[in-house]
Every structure is written in structure tokens, then in C-alpha cells.
Length: 365
Image (cartoon, rainbow, N blue to C red; front, side):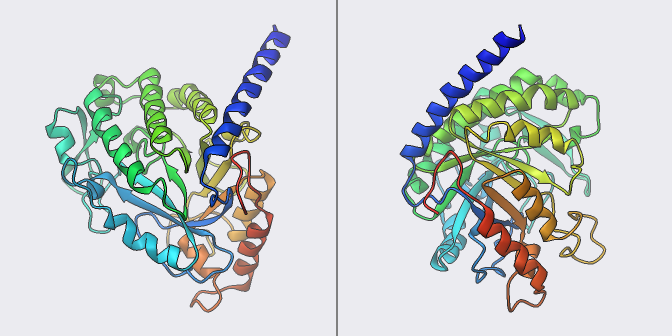
């Protein structure tokens, strides 16, 4: 039985590897295939713009910003900050978001446009933790929601797939653009509203795979990425993650774990690391830090990555990932001439830039 299973896995690996080679051949020739990037949540923080070891910036934008009315697109919300990075010789990663856990930077909490729900898409109404308001969270497997979202993805691809300097476009699946159903589920055994909406492992897998397929179809020349993390319920984590990670790998999709901390990894992090790095011979792999490092985070902040930037770099190099994303506070601290500059941080980002290699998706770096 074990031999049969091993042979089945080996055959599947070979078939997937062939698919990924084809995926790499179709990508734009300017794709680097690896790199050091910064994330800043929903800001466009340019403080590390001059850092020669930083490849670029992860640009996160809400669907409601980009398509405030059905079929009417606000592309300047992407192009204005993107062009600033491209003009500096950097690259960008695009990360559309359909769900968030609260208001950010003056934007309301609801990242899916109102008109989607008015068209009949189902939702779950959840209270916001820091206010008396509630937020409508899309039922991700609802047919109307998926139809409207696919239309947006097609328009996004038509606009940006040929754009040089765009390295990765992430599949916006759940909260923060990651494979999170709802942060309300974290730490709970179940949530009645989600149960009533039909949340099952099968429905969540269906929703994630449908979105992955739509992005792959819309972006044939750009690396498509799936940001993997805890969907909420532990049972869903264990059942869903390996399934949609394999599906994405079969499509030649970058697998990225968003939630890296110092080792040993926290919050079931080892499970997610293992779930994606097992595909490292098939597709490219990325790690994104959970937060700024404790050496770069604002004073008294509880949102910190344990250790220094070197800690993050060591973890990334140990696991031979192709992309590493740090928070902008660390990137700024690694930038000569900045107010927070630290030579140790500059050496760490330099080390990362010199160590990362492109993976199965290829690249020109």
C-alpha cells in the first residue's frame, strides 16, 4: 500500500512539474522569478524606494476601490503608486482584496462593493470589534458573487497582464487577500452564522479553486500567487490547505505563506510552511512576515515579528524560498540615509537579495 501511494505521488509530481514548466514558458520575459519585497498593508509607503537591495512593493487595493460601480474601474488607484515604484526601477506585486476585518486608512471595512450584494450575492453579517457597526462578508462560494468577481478579474487582467514591472498578481480569496474565511472564526469551534451560510471544507475549497482558476486565465503572462494561511477553523485548515495548495501548484501558481515568525513557528505555522514547501520542486515559494520585526516596529506595538530582520532572512534562506516579503518598517530601517537606518538591517536585506534564487516558474534575475 505504501509503495502504491509513493508511486501515485511520484506520478502526480511529474505531471504537475510538466504543467509548471509550461506555465513558466508563457510568462513575460521581464519576470524576475524571485526577489525581496516590502508590504505595508494598505499604504504605499515609499521610504525604502532608494534601497538598491529591495526589488519592490506589494500593492494592496480593495475591490470596492477599484470597481466602485459595476463595470466602471478606478485603475489610477493602482497606477499612481505603481508608476512611482516602476519609475524608480522597482517592481510591484498586485494584491486585490475582497474582505477585511475593519476600516483602514479612511476606507470603510467592506472591501466587496455594495453593488455586488444589491445584485443578489449572499453575505454573512458580522460585527466590527472596535465599533457598533457591522460588515457584510461575502459568501465566497455564492454563484452571483463568483460571477461578479470573475468579471472584475477579467477586467484586471485585460488592463495589467501585459504591464512590464508587475511581478506577481495575488488571488484575492478571503480576508486580507489570503485564504482566510473570517477572523471571527479564529479560536472558535464553530460560528452559527457561517454554518447557516453553508460553510464546509468542500465549499471553501470550491471557492478558493474557482478564484485561482479565474486569475490564471486572466493573467497568462504574469505570475499568479496564492496567499496561504489559516482559514479559521482547525478542521478546515487541515482539510482545505493541502487540497488547494496542490490545485494551485498544478496551475503553476506561486504558493506564499503569510504569517512567518521566528522558528519555531507560531499559530500552526509549521503546518502551512510544510504544506507549501513540499511543492518547491514544482512551483515557486514565497514567505511573508507576520509583522514588522521587534527591532523595527513602533514602540509599545504588540504587532511584532520576534527578532530582527536577519531572523526573517535566516528563515527564508533555510527554506530556500524564492520571494521574501518584509514589512516596510524593516525595509526603511535597512535603507541608508533613512532616520531609522541600522547597518545590521542593511546587511540583512543585502544578504537576502544575494541569496534568493528563482524557482520552477523561471525568471531573468
